[in-house]
Length: 432
Ligand code: GDP
Ligand code: IMO
Ligand code: MG
Image (cartoon, rainbow, N blue to C red; front, side, top):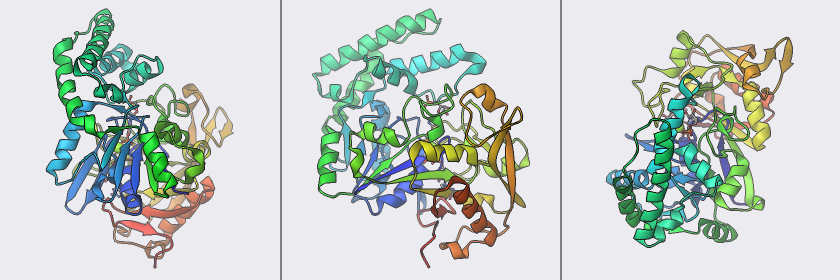
């Protein structure tokens, strides 16, 4: 059975891009199924660092076909910019290598303006969105008022009219909120140019994937965001507007569940979150700074898309356990283990205490979650640099112990961890 679904187990930025890049070496197709250019997936390869927002992370492998599924929301102008910059870096991006669903939804200039307006109106209670128009685009999708990628195949005037109508409707809302309105004609011009570039890439990707799966091709479904940002399962309303979880892969690509072989959860070895919302294990002192890094390295904890510093804290096993239950992970992988080197002790939040009661899973309301006191288990740290390790047996005993404890608390095997951002900085349980 040829599908592996890869999912962020936390609040995004778990290192999904680098793990997809690894899985892609033995895959035929890598398919993104949710979100848009709110995502920022980093792949480090030799001296180059690729930051992908819309194009799937399999693109660095010349044998892989990249698919952008119907569950995505796509800003065509930003997609063309990304394709052009990848081409400049020497990547061959043709309609044979990149296939875009005709059923994905388009992020219009109106959506971006409305995202900004909504965040402004929320003031101190803002979500902290990436301001890429994601929420308003999904709102139009579910409200049955969206414009789809397939509409770019229409006569250019008709596509322009739809975009202009969307901008005019948004202008009414913007005016009500005292925000500057958009000039419909100039707002859509760049969209018409982008549509002309993207036309040859657009296909029915569900039909394409079904044929590939029937032919035995290996497909990696690349999750964006993370389980705790899921519209249904995250800490609502501090979430994104799509379904980054396992079920989302099936609806976001239009593939059947019987093809799924593995569901791989990717978790960072500590917790990070960018944007608002509860984060029970958040730290503010020196340890947080050590986890975040100074910003001097590309892998330090500053947003790939927005550059915002990420909130950092101890690994939250309560949240991970929940992610296991929402997605049914068959396996988990821990990333950024190398960042924990040098800490004298490490803490795992194994449960929460709220008003004298113990919680093994996160409570549903943010009011309770804000008051959750993590119950920590303390483990010994290790001082060695582990970034050159390739086998479990080469890791210090304390690092092995940390991995085993997380696996046991989550009741899911962990057979691989990453110890650096480069393609080969991976530690496998079964390699010598
Ligand atoms: P994604 O959104 O899940 O793909 O993750 P991001 O790319 O936004 O953030 C993860 C960051 O950590 C990137 O800069 C990666 O290059 C980096 N990274 C991934 N795995 C490791 C690792 O094992 N060690 C270190 N030091 N950096 C890593
Ligand atoms: P990757 O794929 C981390 C967060 C935003 C905000 C919330 C809603 O790189 O892991 P949105 O713009 O989606 O409406 O913002 O979701 N968010 C992410 N955080 N990584 C991401 O993607 C994210 N995509 C959205 O910071 O809190
Ligand atoms: Mg990211």
